[in-house]
Image (tube, rainbow, N blue to C red; front, side, top):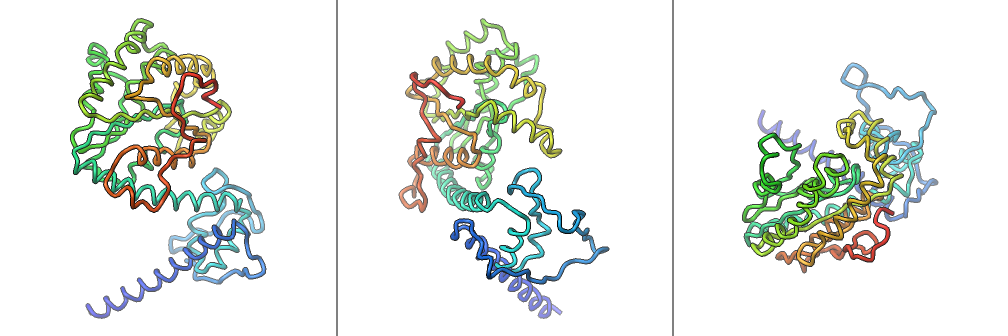
Length: 357
């Protein structure tokens, strides 16, 4: 009995391995051919498909109806069920053709996933160095609503050891916290020895969001701007590395992302009353943001501007920036470029005229 199960398991593993290799070859072919299909070699490969009643629901889309769409976008037609029906390179290429998928977008996404994985391997090495060397790293991720802050943090943390990493996204302050020094609740969240902490919005709420929305007084806002550089300098002198990102998007791109959230039931939770006013208050956000940059950009804690209209580029280049900045062990062995693209990542300087495209 035990021998039979072992043989069956080996057989199943070999079958899965062959299918995985076939799909991997197909993916590589799309990337290498610059997204061009070899249409004269394509054919539909017949595969075993689950029958109704076994947990399988046939497609509801009428036969012959094809909806164009980009992978990862609303309206896309390439589904997990489609991929399960394919077991060869030719079958996958034919599926992509039949579904009228944008091949340039497919190729871009495949290359993005490949680069992302390599950069995440380097992040694992970086974290090992942070733990071994007892470093304390605080990464602040700021930007307008829907700028891609949370998505970027997820790409940073996806494969990191959760015991040596935290993501901090504080809710609005309690009554007790309102009576404390403004920075007090953030001090409790600062990184411990050997730890990386990502702030999904940070103490800089008081620099932009709070004054725009009327959540703080003018006096509180000005006091913050006076104190924050001193606060960060104390952290710097104590050995904490602070990295401050600002994810910059255009007004049009923000509007498009808000609409995508409204249409996607899995992302509607991201919409808040503050988000709903973001477009209306765009110019006010801009004024406070520019004042924040001019008064809080320092040599020991500079602002790093990330052009984030292209989510994938913003994610890759922000990962590169962190990897390029920190002297972790094994960095010289990296099999991928670590220098960030200056067309995406820019250090703030006072002569910058246009920050939101």
